[in-house]
Image (cartoon, rainbow, N blue to C red; front, top):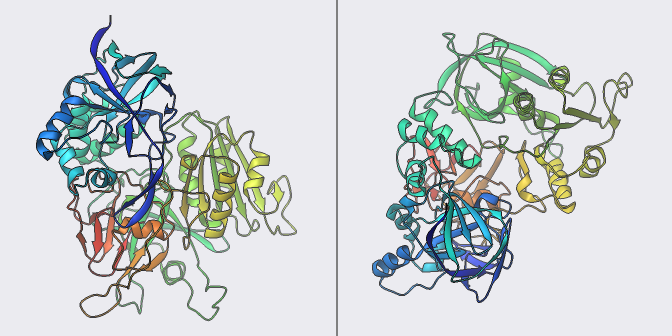
Length: 585
């Protein structure tokens, strides 16, 4: 049985155009204006509206914002506000957010929508309204509005009635979801209630599960550093050694997401301070209670053969034996497999195979089709070959393809490897049945540029290509951030500390060190200018998406974060260094 929920007051459309935000020029469709007449809605949203921020996310196809919220903002700000000012697609006369339930289905004209989640504000709102603190005020006010998925496309127009054709029985309102996931400290009871909502989108479900584990004091991480003992080490390839790490007392180490990394603080002889490095968790150790990492010995740069070889890798290879104790921070990182139904393609080269091992192990327990494609020089440099073959044989639907660029005389085609040559996007196009898949790519910078750029040239959407650098990062062709291409501001002077030393920022995970310049807005902006793609959403310290570990140094906040920040962590979207820093990106 249906009932009238409200009325559509305005359909708002925007054109993609440059906007200067926090010293950067981005491309966005945030600036929306009321449109006349009927508008066509398809699965991705309004056809005549330029999608930039939410492209490829059907759970955020349309944003609705209520008239009652406009009335309160007009009173609070003391000025008139036209429909579309808050970037919404549909301005509606309807109930408050605590009466709108996740999973409600609404019919507007010919279109059927399903409510999916609250709207979390972003930095563009501050520019559009000319109020620097408006994102924080927006979230704390509780006047958030809601996103919808398009169930049935069609035409809509101002004046259409909004009918509720299905009322969610889970009882989680968009207002409650915004409070529990984005404003309040993690609460086990509230998060359990949220997770009982069958209509909760996968991305929010994953976040709620992480928060619930934290609220219960479970598993996926510990605070600060802890001792881990080396229980085994193995030669996996000519220049790769694996280390099994366990708790000294035998306690099972917390769980981790496949693709995450472990941060080690190494006491290297001759070093003035601990050398901090990150290594991907390749999987559990032999006993199933610890972690396994793999370390490639880093040689001196080809263009500077007299320079020292890798300090940390050399220390681990030459001096760290079974029984040694290492200090480690908890696994973290967002290069992880996201839920979905499309086939998964794991693409790697060299030591970039390590996150793929954990991902492949995870995918053996799922039903998605998996293609594991890897490039190595020869069998001498191939790490974990037998392990990959064993995982691939564990169920149907997992296919592997191995390339050797310089096979040894004893390497047998069809047995030790599948073809001779380098792994490129052209190879992927040839060996895969279709390019319609989700890609996870890891390897050296040149390899990454070739693969990611080649997939973009072949029409693979950027949001389906997930990547992580091993080695120095650089901008990748065909890749844009969530808000379109960004143009770094003209380089300003390098900032200096109180002693006159230049401030530098080290992105430990990517092996990139860059100077901090006075006109850079945030650590997130610097990372993006260096070619990295950290996860980020609001860019105003509200949502917690960009929070990562601060391994060394001190920061100050250009915008005070409202999302909870644990000790030793930092939301990079609103932080600036006051000393040289190292962060886990």
